[in-house]
Length: 124
Image 1 (cartoon, rainbow, N blue to C red):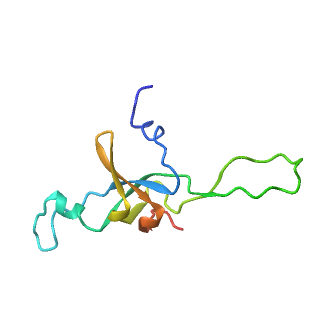
Image 2 (spheres, rainbow, N blue to C red; image 1 turned 180 degrees about the vertical axis):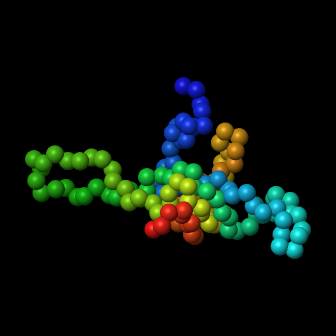
Image 3 (cartoon, rainbow, N blue to C red; image 1 turned 120 degrees about the vertical axis):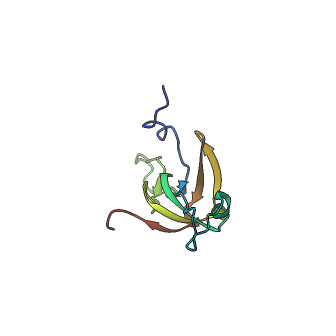
């Protein structure tokens, strides 16, 4: 199968309560008019970026042995979904994130507990 922009994210599976984030392009110029090198903004403790893909969420443990053994058991794992959704702008703690390079671009894998705030286009 040929890798295209449409299917490149379909192959990627984010696990558990983690979120794949692409950094938002930082402003290169400060409020006073100074131009900063790219590495200065990347070392700040709080970063912001767009959510590209999310994991399924927090797994819910299976219930204890049921009292009716004749009933068919549902062995599928259930999850509590994450608050983050694809397309959200996320503010996250950099020290909780892991930097990865995928298809030549830099991304961060961030656990949901390291996300401080989300901005969503649609109304809640």
